[in-house]
Image 1: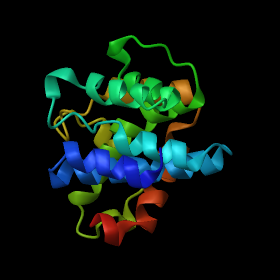
Image 2: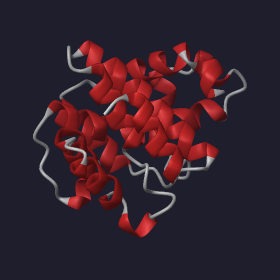
Image 3: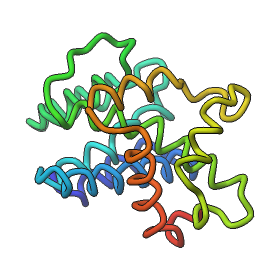
Image 4: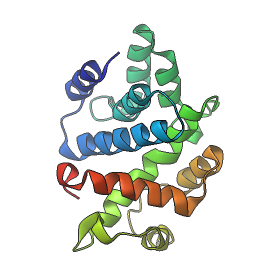
Length: 179
């Protein structure tokens, strides 16, 4: 599958601007991590782009719809990573792709939320600020902090460095993302 086909699938299942932006932010972060880890950038970007594709249209079946569609197309590695992007689903983490998606999904959304409450947006956001907000349970209360911690641990990255990496990726795309 190429990105054009993946974008078509995403847009056929997702209409909400917020979820489309989330898909784009995770796509960008996953692509950057693929480059850092010398992995397939398109595969990683598509994984990030499609990880929540069925959430809006089929919330009770998420992620089973998109996973089944990807498996039908022969994209097993992407399908598996998406099926594992929440630890409570009890899917084993077999590849760096699986672990990276878990480590990037919730945290990327959280970092976007942090940037939205700052007058300067993401421009002056630091890892220290994000870590402080993570300790504030009332801020972005739906973000599961234990999922963030599990992903960072599985990926084997330092939390501060990971947050900084995500911030830098998003900064490069701040106009497109409106953050």
